[in-house]
Length: 71
Picture 1: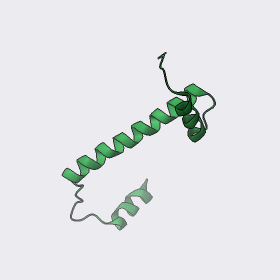
Picture 2: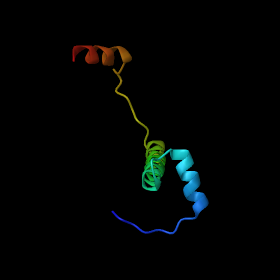
Picture 3: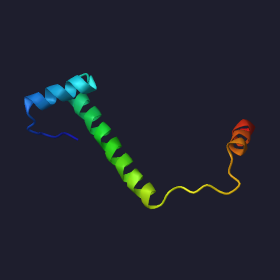
Picture 4: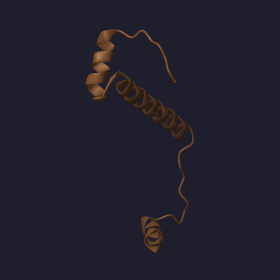
């Protein structure tokens, strides 16, 4: 998608510095993807705090290792 946005030069400079993007577009895509990752993790953490993961009673690391070794 092509977008026109007015973003201060100092913000663009900082984004380029932190993302090491090839150009402004690459830098902005990297920064936005990182931001989305953080927001998705925050949402997941909220959901898990409301309803934590529960393991089956017979769940053990040994059982999982055996399953993985079978494949």
